[in-house]
Each structure stands twice: as structure tokens, then as C-alpha cells.
Image 1 (tube, helix red, strand yellow):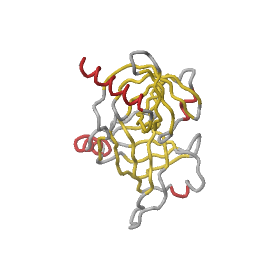
Image 2 (cartoon, helix red, strand yellow):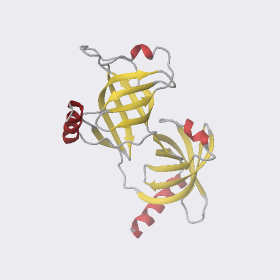
Image 3 (cartoon, helix red, strand yellow):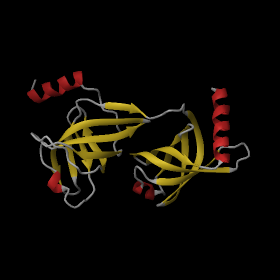
Length: 230
């Protein structure tokens, strides 16, 4: 057995398997260089996971940014943060290598440990509610596949709605859906808290920000009725 195979086997035994989908948006922050004692003051950069080999490395696609290449060097320490199914996940890694063509792709080390913080404070109800999201890239149709007092999970079909690919974590939008028996539409200002792309599907965790009293009353009534049926 080769040394590389032995190393991967040991990692399998002590390192939990990373649960993240290809196409997920992550936030990356430069941290400590090898032998350095001061943390970088640079802010977080949104990147996209485009590949990974479990227990070996991850591949992130970074946006073109002035001065970014000067920060990339083998051994540079980074912190990566992402949200998966209502849980905020954070891990530390090192830059292994990068290429600039056909895009800026950065290879980083597989995490040795993972910090996880559940974000959901409310019970979620599985559902299938047609919805419309009004965003900076236009109006997009989708389905709410689970719902709580604090937010929902929204799924869009990107076939015919390719502008959905431009949406990013932290964006504000207005979500419209019918939650009342009379079919009247309800609207709420919302924020995209996570973004994942799975083939033709765009999946986003959405938090509710502000709405009128009718929305909150309809939401509470819907959740109560659904809970009574489970």
C-alpha cells in the first residue's frame, strides 16, 4: 500500500465526511500564512465549490478580483464557511495550488475537523407550495419545499430561468406564495441565506425579514393546520 493511500485511509478513520453539494456557494477568508502570527484583515470572498475528492482536496472557483492572485500561495491558511440544510459549517484549510485558466480555480486541503452550528430555531413543515421570487435578476418561479416561522427552502428549475445562477448568498428579494385557504397571494421580504446548484435545480435557504400582519397570520395558520395533520 502506497504512502498516499495509507494517508487517505487514516483520514477516513478520523475525519468526518464533508457534506456539501457541488455548486454550493461558500465564503472564504484568508487567515494565517505558514509561520505567521497575524491574521489577514481581508474580508470574505464568495466562491463556488466545483469539485472535491473526499479526504484529499476541494476545488473552489473564485471570482476575478484585483490583487487576489497575490494572496494565493501554497501554505496560506484560509477559513471556509457554508450553510447546508439549515446548519452553518466552518472549517480551516490550506491552499494547495491554483490555476488561472480556464478560470481561477483554487485547490484547498480537505478539512480535518468541522464546526457546525444549527441555524433553525423553528420546526419545519415539508410542503410543495408554488412561489414567485422577485429579485434583481427578474421574477422567478419555484416551489417552497419546506416552511417554518422563520423561513423556507426554495427550489427553482433553472431550465428557462438561467438568470437564477446570478443570485448570491445575502441577496434580498420578495417572496410571494399563497398560504391562505382563499388562495390570496402573500408576500414577504426575504434574504437568501444559502445557495446550492444541483444540475438544473437552484436550491436556496431563505429567511423571512418583514411583512404585513396578514402574511404572519396566514403563515401561522398554515403551519398550525399542517402540524395537526402530521
